[in-house]
Image 1: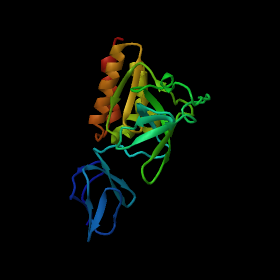
Image 2: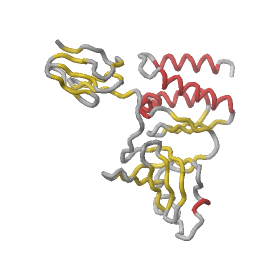
Image 3: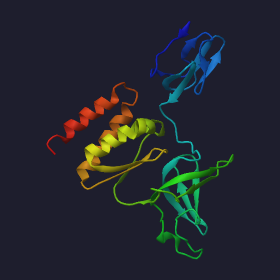
Image 4: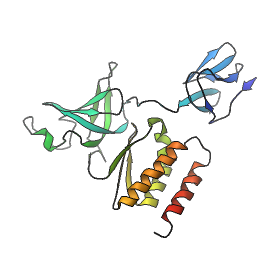
Length: 230
């Protein structure tokens, strides 16, 4: 009776994670008589009596309030259509595209053209998954230069770290600027190509080893070795 797995164990669909009524099914689990069973591939997360499975894979699901990095895929009369790295595109209207006034007859490609990346905030998501975004806010802007990479959206919290600890450590060690979108798109810019490439390598290492205990120490040691003598 009790827990059949430990925190951060990797489980597969159909795997029993607890026996008895002491533990409650949460996201990614369900009850089957006396058992709590996983319904996805993921990491075990225990919060009090509730057992949750955090997926190892899966596409981003847009949520109001998320700051994301989107890609302009269409320019229309009324605004821009944005790829959100999910199954759904978003709309950026003229009113939400800038703190400055944009006249209706303006050439909108002068502001954002197809292929441009922008940092933006999701302002509305309807039940039909029609998504509105805004660029009216601090740090929301067109992203120029640097490099864009994609990571699994489920790994974003690990890449950012507790109160931004992981991403801050990487920025400091590599002397780069990093913006991580909740949708798994990351913008990296530095003064040297070598610094940008090291940043990408480090982020990939965090992504691949996100389930490991002691990850922060491992990344710290790796960065120390890579930047020694700089």
